[in-house]
Length: 114
Length: 112
Image (tube, rainbow over all chains, first blue to last red; front, side, top):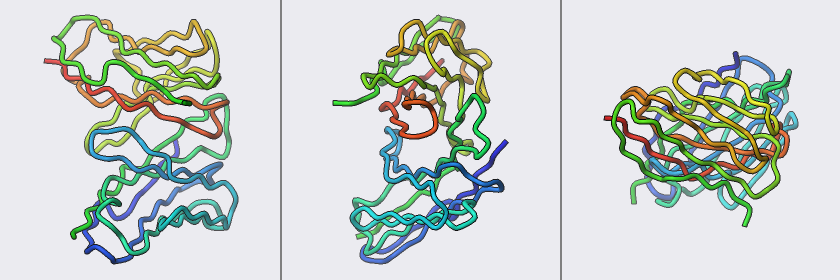
């Protein structure tokens, strides 16, 4: 089965600093999703990437998918306390099949200190 | 508003007492799925459904049942809950399972 490795597991940054979270798969991905979760709450959709080399931005968050479609990065510019939370990457397997199971990494806990 | 609605948000129950967590979506999605989230283990799929009357097991189906009698509803049933089913549960839906996932707000279940 497909596994997603996220790094780092946790991250503490000072407000205003930039940061990057990585998500790596051992297999080629059909689609890569980034979600944000406040502790114990629901998942907020951030971005979806499908094409190799694709890059998307929303406000101060940029996500990229590499050409091989096995690695993605999430970059936050000038972090703010509102960016704090758990960031999850989720991916669909390239082979598809009858279950398009969205598999998740274990998450990155981001703390932004004012 | 397009959404996935789960109920209840919080539930404390006792071992062995049957319970149902409801999930409803208003987007006419064919695909629905249940996940549980546990510290250190992340989100794991319990069951999924490709359409009405079509369901199958995910990675951790033991102790759970589901049904899909209508397109919009996908309840999760715990016939005899045990403490190891204490978890945060999420329902998700997607037009066909290969894109556009929407998640519910979660149900925090505690089994004592």
